[in-house]
Image (cartoon, helix red, strand yellow):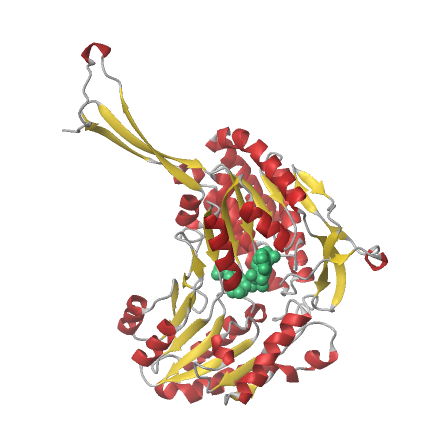
Length: 511
Ligand code: NAD
């Protein structure tokens, strides 16, 4: 990910520089370190982004710490009012936000708008905070004694987000974090940093007090500063597995509460009775949407028995119809990849797959935009006869490459999926309800789709994988999100007549 910061030089003068958002307003970076931001559709650098120093991070934490007492004392009804305003502003301004996503990430407008719509769900969920913050109350647990549980915010919390959802993943985090009364610091991906600042402006307009929401741009320096900072109580992370593991281990070692969501290798299991056209449509949509740069993308198809050949044929037949192009063309269904380096790494799996004995059914490097454009385009690739030892199966490719594997039986397919180190999402395609129910019971994966290829839970449930796809105990957003950003306090009370008071050194009993 992180490019070493390039020194500000004369070439940088003409380009806009994206800074931080600290203490309720934009702040220019002072570290002297910065990284380039590209338009992936043209391949041109369009901006710089400042990389924060630890002093700049300290300033954001100090502002967040100062804002916390006032924000946690703000009534739930007032916080709800502000959350409704944020929700409405994001809704009204969604086209502008989507344009920023297209300009820096490269995803086409329909995809960008979809991302924002899924993020909005999290804001809508958080609008129910008076209900979500309810504790429990037990009257008369002992004579004249009541017990109740309340939930309280943690303090300053931080979110570190990946390039592939620059608006939605921050909303996964900050909606519940600030609704529950915390103050929040966002460290967005340095590849597409503008959406975070756009959201910060909307939050200010909605009435979020200064210091409650801050943005610190940057690289490893900012991240490691967050992990070490004594005034940050909790860290939410979404990104690749090696970094997620680093975040979890370092953050928890430093006494923080951490949820760290990592990478994925999502299998789509297709049983012999599945509808082939429907399964092929789903595979193409979920494999190539957002150029495969989704943690819930289908990466590999496991075809059981005879359905393999007709399914591969049906997928192959659909590939020439996928319209690849820049987000500025309304006809485009799939945009470029995020950087040239990432595009070339994705393409390299076609070579290793062929060398290791797989069959290249479609090679995305044959798309004219791969050759003729300066943008980071790659066409759709389909690799068949893949086996578990091949690099294209072992690694998370995170690009528009679908691999296909054969399984003789359901049990073989299930064993393959359960042996995979990742456990983010999976899907089964079948017309047999009993088989689907058995799969749901058997599979060691956190999010399961039954004839649903991208089973991202709605915001009233929580999002999270198993195994190497998540480090920590609680999943992201939904009820787990409320739990993650709060801690529970249990109060035992009685109001006896002082005249009945006496000394009793025995351990308090309830009966
Ligand atoms: P990444 O791990 O490279 O970066 C994620 C964040 O970590 C960024 O903010 C980045 O600046 C920071 N970072 C990167 N390297 C670091 C380092 N060495 N030390 C400290 N911080 C570092 O991930 P990415 O390329 O931005 O995003 C793609 C990855 O995210 C894929 O693996 C994808 O599966 C995963 N992802 C997972 C989910 C999920 O919910 N499980 C969702 C979206 C993306």
